[in-house]
Length: 219
Ligand SMILES: *Cc1c(COP(=O)(O)O)cnc(C)c1O
Image 1 (cartoon, helix red, strand yellow):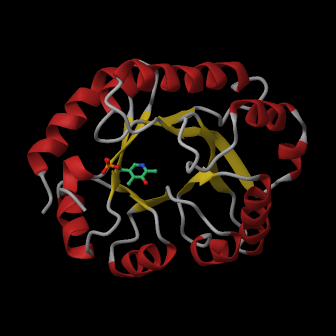
Image 2 (cartoon, rainbow, N blue to C red; image 1 turned 120 degrees about the vertical axis):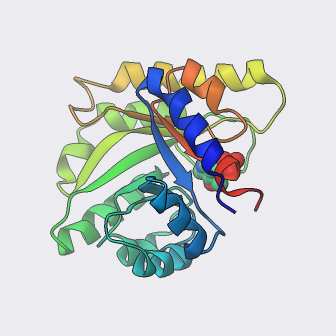
């Protein structure tokens, strides 16, 4: 079920921050995504390639699809023709693969580097030092079919709000350090915050939140 009341209240909360909403529709059928589209939402986040490709074929071309999961290099070619942004770029190898496939379809694909800020071992991503080193190198300038638009991160899943806040703050600090002139003029997006922690993320400088369960219910 799609929750229009929550959509409206989240959009209102975002206004003072000039932040964007990515509606995370993973594991929800296209019919439910349609309800959100009818309510005016056009940016959707998906985690699984098969599922995304199927929904993209069913839904209007005006939808902007963001890939927010862990993307395997061998699946890049399936989404590159239509993807609006790849948020979870967690390795240089993946970035190079996206660049290569984007070149084949004459596209420049918007990407966010995923940075590991949580303490859990299982989270993918660059650590802060790696991201900084990569962004300060000139490796990026060789990837002509990538537009690096910013950073994405996930905080620890914990009730310890101070810990969550500190993790978001560490990502904002990195973002401020590497944005212009280091990373270029397109580098403007800081994607952090999900249903359980987006208010903290906004207070700590997020300008893009990724919300699933508050809009579509539990998965
Ligand atoms: C599933 C997911 C979300 C949305 O999580 P909710 O808690 O349902 O809001 C956000 N970001 C990423 C990377 C996800 O995988």
